[in-house]
Length: 398
Image 1 (tube, rainbow, N blue to C red):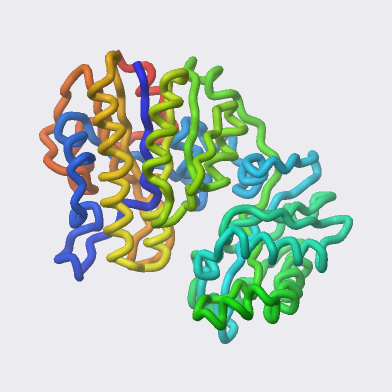
Image 2 (cartoon, rainbow, N blue to C red):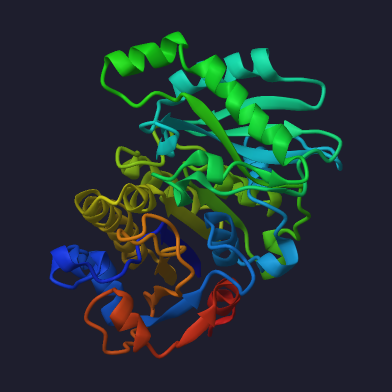
């Protein structure tokens, strides 16, 4: 048996008045996911355990078969692993966003989805100007970067994700608690360095949002994982543009597959991800393919972009992998789901359970569903499932 777990980040949503009371999944044209729902079984997955924030780190860790209550230590350490940044026992890794601040408010949590090339210049400038013996900056992808603080600095600081406070006054959400003043000062110091940087002056001239500040959040120590193969008896690989997902793969001992042109946005290299997934399944049992675009569109509050992102996920990821599975000489299992909702109405993550569908090419176990969406999943025969149990359910199914 081969397995493909296809994750459309943030696809789930609430009913939207402009779509006639339909959710994004109900309004989008998704024939491949509908095909899987018709021929497979559906249910709802609780990806955010009680007591945890509804972050992509917690949700995707759950989907990859790791209970956050056992393994979670913070988001940024996972990203550090993907970036090849080794953490000492007393190192605290922070996620460092490049953001746009205007009139004292966060205008854009992604600085206009700044290019990785521009961002690298800015982060390297910050490292030159602001790094100390206790703190260093590391460039990542687009707006997503890393700070490593040493000697336990910031471990207990209270931080807020920037995508949760778009449009709000930053003074009300600056880091608090222990060492909060230090990191608030770091954010303010970054603005002095970045405001008139040539990269940002050019972006403003071209009508783009400037990356005129950093924002720190998601900190933690390096976690300790049991390998995926030891847990489930299967070899696994992960394909994603996002360092967070790659980092989980690193700690889980999976193959982390790099795809040229994978951006984490609407312009990502869908076809490259599919080719990589099909190729890795020649030698591995299971592949996770993660697409970030629906989540980004949800954070932007764009109905049109989210519809496009979901339809692209269906047409350019799900459909070709489904076709490959059905043509395969061996049985093939597909699991389709979002990691969490990112509703248009709130522009951030929520903790609602998400729809999922499971289809095996060697059998048809229909629930009677006609479409892949939130309402169909509520009626599915698999009921409400703890997401970290899903991989175990797949590999143990007869």
